[in-house]
Amino acid sequence: MLVRLIYASYSTTDLNRDDIAQILRTSQKNNSVKKISGVLFYSDRYFLQCLEGERHAVNETYLRIAADPRHAKCVLIDYNAVPSRLFPKWAMEHASFFGGLDNELIIKYTEMGVFQPFHFTPQQANSFLAEVAVIAATLDDTVRRSQQLILRKN
Image 1: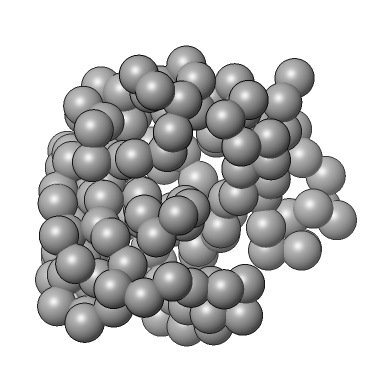
Image 2: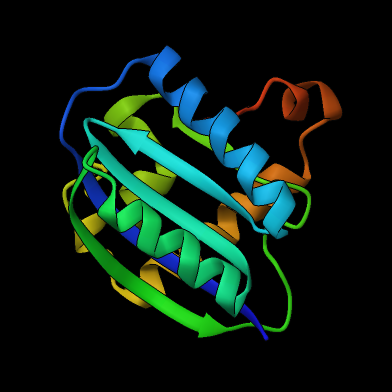
């Protein structure tokens, strides 16, 4: 059974680009073996992550993440069986926000225009991720190889 799990958490330390790059390398290696796909958002110490794959592999991965001391307040936003993946080609990618408070996706899915994923309802989180997947599908391979998706203002 294919599932999609979406969670939010708060980083116990402020992470820099190198820290995120290391998390991505480890995630990509582990997720490739387990056939998990997804995307990771990190901004102002907040994480939002989507994991997609077989139920057992996704559950095991989420439990490991939730127990990681780098996370605090790990909250499950949504968990459902799904017919297909939003991010089938990504063992794990990182998405950054370009434009800060002016980012249209952040404004669209938050009340104050600030990325605070704890406030996402399951419907908001899924709609947000669906839009990110559409943006990602339009990117060329050069951007995909850079291991970073930047959500730009339109």
